[in-house]
Length: 309
Image 1 (cartoon, rainbow, N blue to C red):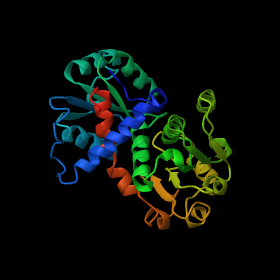
Image 2: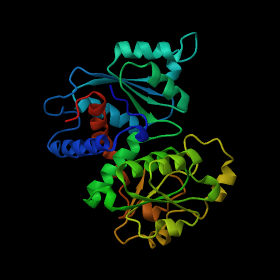
Image 3: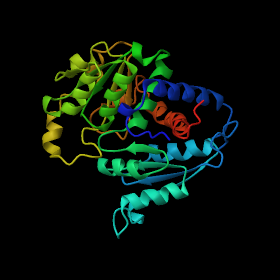
């Protein structure tokens, strides 16, 4: 049984296999409609339970289509509709029930402790659809999109992140270590990645580059990422944080420091951290990035179910 909870815990060769499988599966579906099942129906008879404690659009839709296209089925639950840690039923008991009814569990939450608790007690594979410290399915799909557009391994590219040190960046940092690509981060000093993340990078004998000047971070970039300054998990003073990031907007001027063929990616939803000129311009591939999540989610499911070819 294999979980997909944090990229730090997944071997590099497995991440590469997931991306390669996703490429093959996307290519093989060119003549199929959205709900047509993949040839051989690799997950026929399999059942995935999705549970959401956080709002979701792309994760919800992509996992629904992913399991359907693989020949399986799914149901979506909201935690406030269940006992989940309340009414006398523990997460451990809930995990045992889920393991009885389903073959896999996808969880999107605002509590890392719940992720670890479920992981401990489940006897079926678990996928992290988003947690405060990690967003692994998003980042692996982003890497898939980068390689699809650039037509080369991400290890040969300069990747830049402009913005807050959030769950998406944590997973991007983990990916940079696992897949050996250069990652430059532009953010205010008070909002740099946590020390335990930086210690993990150092422990793995890798290096990331952190700048308090966004222009230095964007220098010679092949890809520029951004995300909302006030993220889904934030409980900070909005005015203070917004002011700290006022010089970190991704706009035409910042793009002038990147390579000419640099592309822009954003996990969505967007805020004021990127100009319309960039977000809606030729450099932006955010819609392709969003749609690709279906293909990568399928390969993640196959990995978890032990059926990755």
